[in-house]
Length: 456
Ligand code: UD1
Ligand code: CA
Image 1 (cartoon, rainbow, N blue to C red):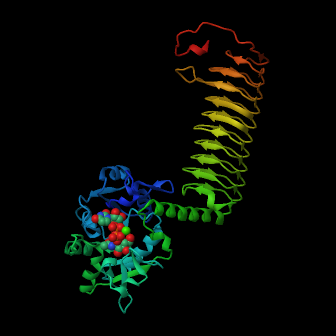
Image 2: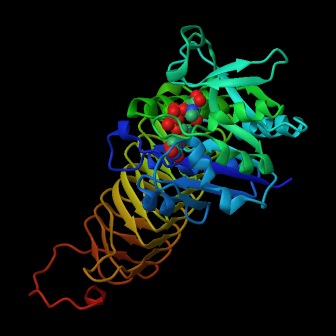
């Protein structure tokens, strides 16, 4: 049975007090509307339609390639919003799911349950998600018929005092029989303010003797809607708890889950221990038996097993097993550290490979370099990779020894087992069996910059 999902995202979100459309605010590092799309993708929706309205262009731009969009030029209510997708979807699907873009914690499993409830609802119009909350404020109240089906949804403004006390509420998530939906939607009558309520479909179905099934959300957090930045932070905290619990149940120790920020996309192996104040983001994979110590940020990086990282920032890097970093290391895009590399305090590595067992203990910069195995990089070493115009490469052979404060003026090669002395300014290749000694520096008049000026 082909399924379409319609995601409502036209509302203004005034209470966010933001120039950014509400549904483009991020939860778990991802704009809310993309989370809603992801949830729908997971149940295998054949058609995905986002209803845009306020700041339609920005929202449409954000979802391009992931969903189709339809414009609701005027926000005349949830019923009117779904109607905007009718032309696009009529005849193209048998079941229509409706969700909100500002409900970022909804699980695909819940959508699946709703689909199944509607499949079992032979001849019925739709299945809807309900939730029981201690504080029903702001939600439509559910009235049940004697047979357990949904008899009506009463919006808060229209509730009698007794109805107001009802705790079973409309979450705003539905699975409709498509053919029924498209013919019923135009029959919704506007309220006094000119709004068309999607919830009026209950009345229309019941009047035809068609059944509306209400299934309860097992986790009330799932249907929390975001209207303010306070809600945004609450939702973020709930999501963080969910993610952290998942990792802990998979064998990862989080010393303080409340201050551990792990995005959903991250994978972590068992018996890794994570200390407080750590952020793991993006497309990051951490191996097993690692120790990620406090104040570390790892983004889009691969970390092997048995690594130890302390108070460091790692972006777009790859670490093989048994690598040690920090405190205060900085790995940037394209850093590749082979097994057993040790990078001590204030080391920075960019677009460079460090071979097995290479050591770089103290405040050094390695950029655009190819460094062999078992190399010792003395404190203060710099690969001088930029001449003001272009980047150049440094190559250091296996077992080489780079003395403290060496300036390696690239392009330059240090042969295997060759050495540089402390303070050397190395402008020429160091051949095998040699040590480069370069003190003191000599004075020369400045030459106009040429692209390869530093090559000598
Ligand atoms: C709606 C339900 C209510 C339910 C609640 C759950 C109706 C009439 N009421 O109430 O029973 O308990 O959700 O949160 O449906 N939107 C549009 N276009 C519009 C109006 C809304 O795209 O013209 C979108 C909003 O951006 C939002 C969603 O639909 O994502 C819900 O709209 P909102 O105004 O928050 O609905 P409520 O009145 O709170
Ligand atoms: Ca609302």
